[in-house]
Image (tube, rainbow, N blue to C red; front, top):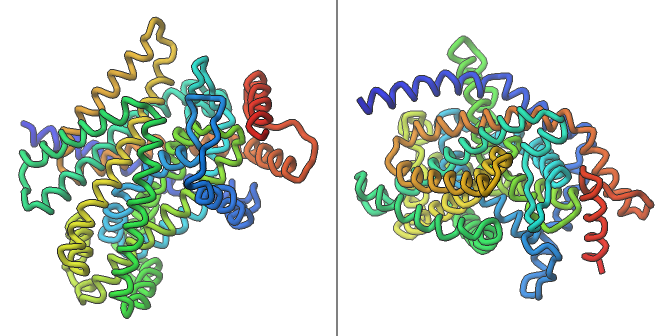
Length: 504
């Protein structure tokens, strides 16, 4: 009976996924990025230095210095908002997802990750700008923002905003399921305990840890993320560089196979070849979006909680976020996986193909190169990546629930959020034992559904993004223009006052 239910769900999802992640979606993702890139005159290139100098550089300089208190007690710092957002993007998608894309779409999928990320840098920038411009601050000082706000209040389509919020809740549950599933799988492999009892125990531990953090809301999530993200990212980067150096002789061949696989003869000939070529693009794009989330309208929810009043300033964090996620972390994963297998001589055999297990391949890459130390470090990094993603998406789902049930009176909205959190935590435990391929496929579908209304809104509001961006840089040049900080006149006046107080 259970197997029949799973089979039915799998077949239904395969059908829906084929529609959601068909060519229209691929064209929409790339098209949105291209439109925004053209309208902002390739800002990801022109202002990349500004992005670095406005975001990560001053953050590093401020380490150890006392923090300036914002007048809004419920907000978080720009770096904490960024950490919460990037903790949602830097997850198992960066390791397992990239490995899966290479296994199912071939090495050429990496190029499509890069292409989607290049344009995704400005898609993410656009989402952040819109998110902060259309966010709302309640009487308690809490900021709420996300794609559903600029869909409902920007393009004036409330029904589509509600739909986006519902898809966000589903994507949040699906994303936590993927991360928990990979945590339990990794721990089971590391301890040679591949049984459901052990996995359920792991799921319960993850669920309890999640409860402790999400009770504190975005401030606690941001604080935890700001501590874990730099640590786990630096550890992963160091370990990856060591492995790449160990396989340095295979690096030229690695880049060769990546680029030649994009337009290989096999991919361009015949029906099978056409299918192979489409898989290279679709897997690269789907995993790229799964990893950096540019186009989903998800990370903007965390960015919207930032204390900054300047939409463009937080938008610049979005450019750096996608760059770091894909061009640094995902690229290192790809180089490690492909170079290791080329160096060992199994890349061109059936041992490395679509039939291989993504988690097993990822784990073997680190253990084969670094022995037991690699296995231990991998078993630490992957759960950390996954756990921080679970925390971030719990907040995304919470904010989507608030938006959906904001009309409820007498504490109804808070009750709805509590119900969501309970379901979220319970499904963390259940996800520990669900078949990995199914839960990954389900979340791919939810991500695609979430992206559709968001991308439409970004395209329709691209002119507004240009105006807000020009307004910010005009003011930086000393031109006397009224700041565009919020879409709501009264809130814009308040933000202008806040901005002057924060600059004192």
